[in-house]
Image (cartoon, rainbow, N blue to C red):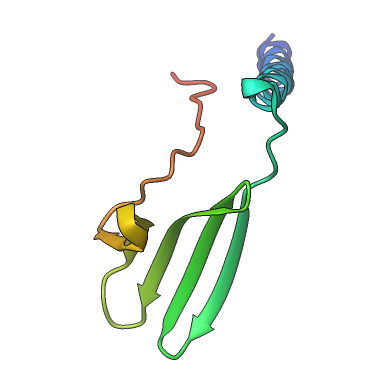
Length: 101
């Protein structure tokens, strides 16, 4: 009985993942009638820093700077070509709670 329940839970989780991926991909590509490209991350090593540049549709949306001996910080484009420094990422990453008990 317990094995059947475990198999059923695993099957339900797999089905929900496939369904949510399908729904997400069709809704995001149809948004505003334009095709959205995959996000792109370019990682560079510069001296004692690791720099990750995040692009969405070819537009720079955030730079993550990870110094070797200091806390990580983020640079976000602001008006006038300036970069605004923040301690937290401004990117919205989709995440779902699949199962909890």
